[in-house]
Amino acid sequence: SGAPTETYSADETAFFIAFGIRMSDRISGGAGLRLYRNDLFRSVESPTSIGVSLGLAARVTDRLSLGLAADDLLASYNWNGTAAGGGSVEDRFPIRLRTGTAYALGAEGRGGQITAEMEMQVQGAESIRPRGVDLIGSQTVERDTTISYTLASVQGRIGGEVWLAQPFAVRAAVDRIGVGPTQEMRPALGFALRQRFNELGVRIDYAATLEPYASGIMHMATLRLEL
Image (tube, rainbow, N blue to C red; front, side):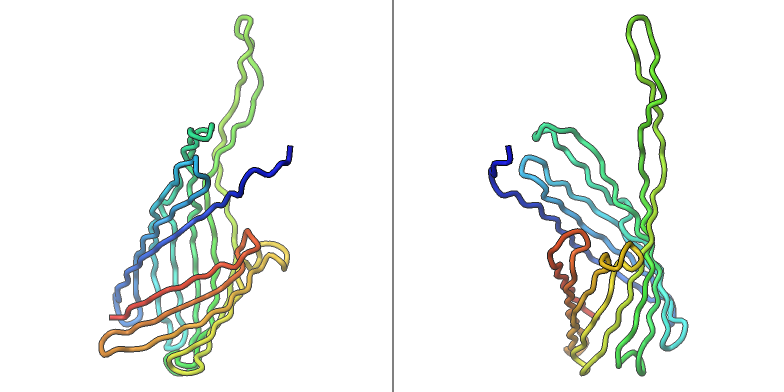
């Protein structure tokens, strides 16, 4: 009837932790874990999932670096909507394959850097297509075929940072390049603050960007400890 009842909200939260190791003077590798939680509706049990990330980075020259990464391996949401009158379904996350490059400005990147990245998202899917109807006795039975296929999409992003002073830097970037029309691209702004306390290095990164599928602003903050 269109009469308002009450206000509903949906929240999704992600936490991650990553570890890296230097294999040689120019090659490093790492692994990470991401914890996802989705609060969609109070009558639906909130699913949680853990995704695995693997990465490899190489410093080609003193200023040019290359990297490869695979994100969200094994991640999926298992929805149980029985309490809301629905069913159960597994929603697998697309696997994100990324390759990127970074070019340092100034000696050892002290002046800043320019980065570019290409990402491919790969996801398996299934669809059921009817093949016809069989007549068994006096009853009709529908015949169908389950088709499995793979969906893939590619997008790019580019950004840069400039260190105004050694403790403070400003950043700007553009995401979702090549996804669709120009209005589909998402700009971002942020800053970095770093300080060293004896043997411990502390770095705080912050960024604000337009959400890709909504009209709000997404805020991201990262705390890094360099031992």
